[in-house]
Image 1: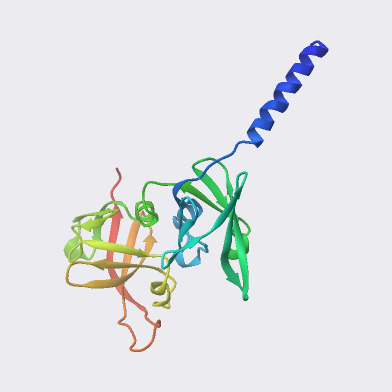
Image 2 (image 1 turned 30 degrees about the horizontal axis):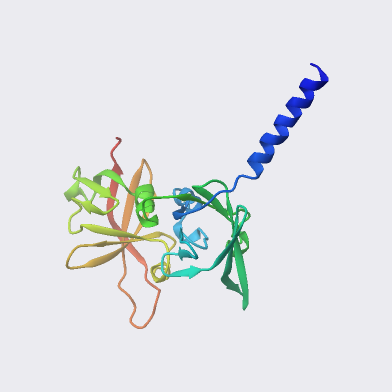
Length: 242
């Protein structure tokens, strides 16, 4: 290889990597917490720390949601970094957060100081809300009832917008944030099942052989938030292979 060819290759490599480094990504629309969704498949939801589950980029602000409250944050953009101003308080000190855009449709929220994890949270652009993505991730699909015996072999469908053929219920909501996380003392995931007349609270967890187990919960204690207990098994649903 001649010296001229080597010089040309070196120039092209430097130009390529320089262009890669200087790519200026622009974030717009709604992004959901991909790291949370991945961890939710195996972890207890109450054990997953997060700053936000959903961030929406507007022209002059970012709308955040953590499941029980929403708010707007002002930001400054420099290159691929977005500085979120006054994002949270820690021991009375106002803290900022940084977003590092990794493409026009992905970014990393540098939130390890907030969550106290060793890693940060990755987000992805989404056309659906976080709650819909969480439902699809955890429950969506067809199941066959294995318990109680009186309902054995009945097929139940969990969809992102409701449940069909589960006696007495047509809607559900997965508890992942807010007051509902503090109601039951036992370490278990929580869900509300509803129809037009009632709302019931259940504990739920993954069982053996690709099953979901639902448990009834004791009644609320008057004037106390929390202290409720898991009572007994209500349903066991086995997922039907696609």
